[in-house]
Image (tube, rainbow, N blue to C red; front, side):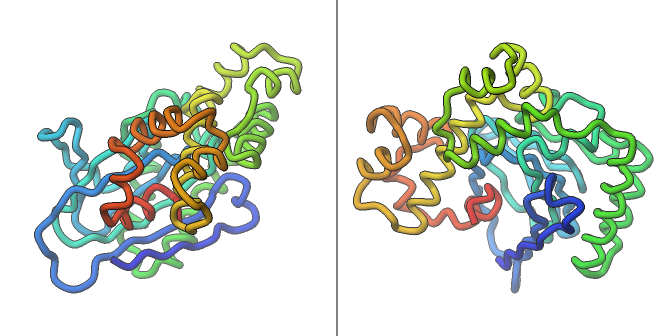
Length: 272
């Protein structure tokens, strides 16, 4: 697989973490399941290659649309290629999709919805233009024109949500939600309602996912001595809490993570 990332323009950098592409090389081989982990981001995905299947249970899967928005993940997700991979996607910052839609992002948490359903006729035109483009630079130009037009007249980030997202990221998820709410002199429940609508997750769950992603970063860079050291470095109370969260977001314990090659999961979960 060839994975590449592309930076957004300055006008959209506040909302978009990156664009990315994934392409298979050579002749397609027998397909196998790949596991995707939560990363706190939402994706706008276009399959210009063959489609992927998403597993709803261990043995039941549905074929993804040609283009779709996937909401926040609260746990792992299994997918499987059906042939040649060709994917181009927008990875939004947490809350970054909200200014481009009038919907509550809670509506798409853990599910996907086609671009045509999400944006109607405009989404249909966008899909056709992206799939007919011949280069990724053309795709980026088409997407940026579309998204910048969507920004006009739409509400911007709620300042409390924007502050909390940045604070959670800066502290690798080790934050006190009550203190965050007090910073803006609003109640925790009100903050949570705003956050779930604008991010698709509660601030507490986003913090847990952010801390988990920091764990994956420490593992990938080798900046640790052992699993106990990772748990301590990441701010877990003890190793039991560390293993509980790791299992919740991956489906297995940390030692199992070391035993397999999870390169595609790192690509698609935003770890790289």
